[in-house]
Length: 105
Image 1 (tube, rainbow, N blue to C red):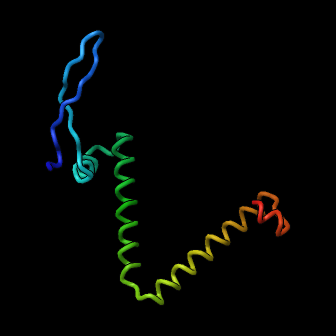
Image 2: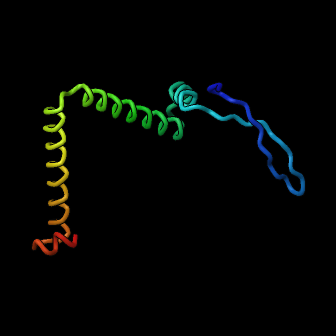
Image 3: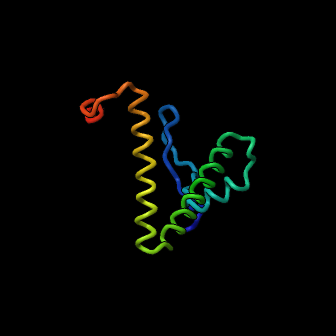
Protein backbone atom coordinates (compact mmCIF):
# COMPACT_ATOMS: atom_id res chain seq x y z
CA UNK A 1 0.00 0.00 0.00
CA UNK A 2 1.20 3.47 -0.83
CA UNK A 3 1.67 6.01 1.94
CA UNK A 4 -0.50 8.40 -0.11
CA UNK A 5 -3.20 6.16 -1.62
CA UNK A 6 -5.50 7.91 -4.06
CA UNK A 7 -9.14 6.96 -3.58
CA UNK A 8 -12.45 8.36 -4.71
CA UNK A 9 -15.50 9.06 -2.66
CA UNK A 10 -19.03 10.00 -3.58
CA UNK A 11 -20.27 13.42 -2.56
CA UNK A 12 -23.76 14.74 -2.94
CA UNK A 13 -24.13 18.21 -4.40
CA UNK A 14 -27.78 19.05 -4.42
CA UNK A 15 -29.65 16.32 -6.28
CA UNK A 16 -26.49 14.95 -7.94
CA UNK A 17 -23.96 12.47 -6.59
CA UNK A 18 -20.50 12.49 -8.10
CA UNK A 19 -17.12 10.95 -7.31
CA UNK A 20 -14.23 13.16 -6.23
CA UNK A 21 -10.55 12.43 -5.67
CA UNK A 22 -9.45 11.92 -2.11
CA UNK A 23 -6.42 10.44 -0.35
CA UNK A 24 -5.97 7.92 2.42
CA UNK A 25 -2.79 8.62 4.35
CA UNK A 26 -0.74 6.18 6.36
CA UNK A 27 0.57 7.21 9.75
CA UNK A 28 3.97 7.78 8.14
CA UNK A 29 2.44 10.07 5.48
CA UNK A 30 0.75 12.10 8.22
CA UNK A 31 4.07 12.32 10.04
CA UNK A 32 5.84 13.61 6.91
CA UNK A 33 3.17 16.23 6.26
CA UNK A 34 3.11 17.45 9.86
CA UNK A 35 6.89 17.56 10.30
CA UNK A 36 7.29 19.60 7.12
CA UNK A 37 4.29 21.87 7.69
CA UNK A 38 4.07 25.40 9.03
CA UNK A 39 3.92 25.22 12.85
CA UNK A 40 2.06 28.55 12.93
CA UNK A 41 -1.00 26.65 11.68
CA UNK A 42 -2.83 25.15 14.64
CA UNK A 43 -3.43 21.74 13.08
CA UNK A 44 0.27 21.40 12.19
CA UNK A 45 1.38 22.50 15.67
CA UNK A 46 -1.00 19.97 17.24
CA UNK A 47 0.29 17.25 14.94
CA UNK A 48 3.90 18.05 15.78
CA UNK A 49 3.07 17.91 19.48
CA UNK A 50 1.29 14.58 19.01
CA UNK A 51 4.23 12.99 17.22
CA UNK A 52 6.73 14.39 19.75
CA UNK A 53 4.72 12.84 22.59
CA UNK A 54 4.40 9.51 20.76
CA UNK A 55 8.16 9.45 20.12
CA UNK A 56 8.87 10.12 23.80
CA UNK A 57 6.44 7.39 24.87
CA UNK A 58 8.12 4.91 22.54
CA UNK A 59 11.54 5.84 23.93
CA UNK A 60 10.27 5.20 27.46
CA UNK A 61 8.78 1.86 26.41
CA UNK A 62 12.06 0.84 24.75
CA UNK A 63 14.00 1.72 27.92
CA UNK A 64 11.51 -0.20 30.08
CA UNK A 65 11.73 -3.26 27.82
CA UNK A 66 15.52 -3.32 28.23
CA UNK A 67 15.23 -3.67 32.02
CA UNK A 68 15.49 -7.06 33.69
CA UNK A 69 12.43 -8.41 35.54
CA UNK A 70 13.48 -7.14 38.99
CA UNK A 71 14.12 -3.60 37.75
CA UNK A 72 10.79 -3.60 35.89
CA UNK A 73 9.03 -4.63 39.08
CA UNK A 74 10.75 -1.80 41.01
CA UNK A 75 9.83 0.69 38.30
CA UNK A 76 6.17 -0.38 38.30
CA UNK A 77 6.09 -0.30 42.10
CA UNK A 78 7.37 3.30 42.09
CA UNK A 79 4.85 4.25 39.42
CA UNK A 80 1.97 2.74 41.41
CA UNK A 81 3.20 4.53 44.54
CA UNK A 82 3.05 7.89 42.71
CA UNK A 83 -0.46 7.19 41.37
CA UNK A 84 -1.69 6.13 44.82
CA UNK A 85 -0.23 9.33 46.32
CA UNK A 86 -2.00 11.41 43.67
CA UNK A 87 -5.26 9.56 44.33
CA UNK A 88 -4.96 10.15 48.09
CA UNK A 89 -4.22 13.86 47.56
CA UNK A 90 -7.18 14.22 45.20
CA UNK A 91 -9.48 12.42 47.64
CA UNK A 92 -8.31 14.64 50.51
CA UNK A 93 -8.85 17.78 48.38
CA UNK A 94 -12.39 16.54 47.66
CA UNK A 95 -13.09 16.31 51.41
CA UNK A 96 -12.66 12.56 51.84
CA UNK A 97 -11.54 11.80 55.40
CA UNK A 98 -12.61 8.36 56.58
CA UNK A 99 -11.74 4.96 55.10
CA UNK A 100 -15.41 4.42 54.25
CA UNK A 101 -15.53 7.69 52.30
CA UNK A 102 -12.30 6.75 50.53
CA UNK A 103 -13.77 3.38 49.51
CA UNK A 104 -16.77 5.17 47.99
CA UNK A 105 -14.56 7.83 46.39
